[in-house]
Length: 503
Image (cartoon, rainbow, N blue to C red; front, side):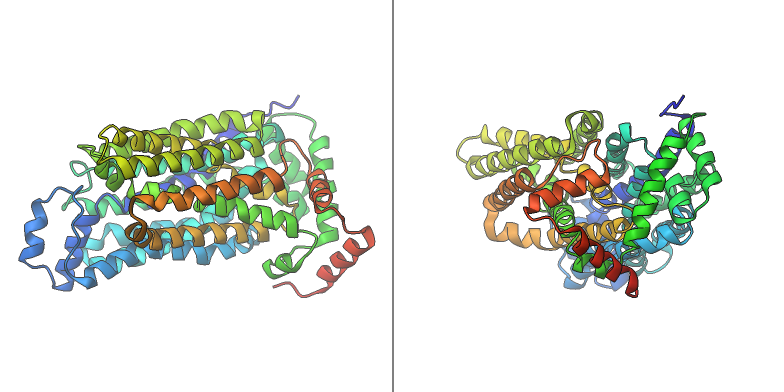
C-alpha cells in the first residue's frame, strides 16, 4: 500500500527547500546593515570624511544619505547585481536540470553559493565594495538557478494529493530565510561594524548543509524514467519516496507522459515563444509572475522600515520583523489550504485583498498628518497586505508553471517564468524609490490599479489546476481559446518542432 508521506520524501523536500531558504536570506540580508556597509565602502574608496564619521553614532533606522556619489553607486550596485545574476542564470535552469539530473544540478550550483559566501565573509580583508558586489552577483546566479530547480524537483517527487502544499514550501522557505536575515541583522547581533561581513558570509551556510543532505536524497523518478529511460531505478526511487507499494500506476502515468514528451520533443525557449499550441498557457504563466512582483510586495519588503517610521512607529525595525512573522504564518495557511481550496481561488482572494489594502494604505499615509489614528490604518493595511500576498499570489506562481506544462516544454517555461520574475524584481527595486519621490503617499494607488487588473485577468483567464492532468489542463485552454486547433494542425506543428534544430 502506498504510504504517500515517508521519511525519505520529507528529507528530500526539506533538503531541496534549503536552497529556497538561502534565497530568502540573500534577499533580506542586505537591507539591515546598509549604513554600516556604506561606511566601509567610503573608507575603502578614500572618501570617509568627518561628515561620515559623525554618522557613526547615528541610529541605523534614520534615513541619512551618504554624501559621496561613488558610495551611493557601489551600494546600489550591491543591491541590484543580485537580481541581474538571477535574471541571467534563470535561462540555464533547463540545461542544468537535464544535464546530470536534479540532485546533481543542485549539488553543482552549491559551489556558486559557497564561493559567494566566502567572498562576502572575507570582504573586510580585501576591498569591501568589490568583494561584496562580486559575492552578490555570484549569489544572484545561484538563486536564479535554485528558484527553478527547487520547485521543479519538489513538484516531480510530490504525490499528486500533496503537490500544491509541497510546492508552496518553496515560498515558505524563502520567507523563513528573510525573517532569519532580519533577526540576526539587528545591530546588537550581527548588523554592526564588527560583524557585518559575517552576516553577509552566512548567505552560503545553507549550501554546505544541503550538499551533505543531497547525498541521501533520491533522484526524481520522473527524470530517471522520462529523460533517462531507467525503469528499475525509477521504481526503486518511487518506493524510497512513497513506501513499499505497487508502482505500476505511477509508472503507467509516467509512460503516458513520456510518450507525450516524445511526440512534442524538448522545446527551446525560442520555440516555446513561437508555438501557438502553448501560447495561452505561457501567457497565463508569465502573468502570474507579473502579478506576484508588480503587486507592490517588494516595495513593502524593501521599504517597510521607512513606511513604519513615516507612520510614527518608535522602533520600526521590530515592526518590519513583525511583517516577517506574518509572512511565515500566512504562507503556512497557504500550504494547508492550497490543495483543498485550489490555486485559482486563493490567488483571487489574495490579489483582491491586496487591492483593498493598497487603497487603505494610501488613505492612511495621505491623512495621517490630519488624523493621528490614520497611522494605525496604514500599519494594519501593511500587515494585511502581506497576509493576503502569502495566501496565494506569493507561493502559487512558483509551482503552477510546472502544472500548466507537460514534460517537453516545462523546463523552457520555468526558465522564462523565472527570468520574468527576476526582471520584475529588478525593475521594482531600481525604480520604486523614484516613483515614491514622484508620487509620495499616493504611490500605492498605482499598485492598487495593477492589482485590480490582475484580479480581473485571473478571474477571466486562469483555470483551476488542482487535481487535473496535463491533458485536462490543455483541453481547458483550447476550450477558452474558443477555436481549438485541429489535431492535424497541432500535429504538424509538433513535427515541425521536432525536425528543427533546438537551441
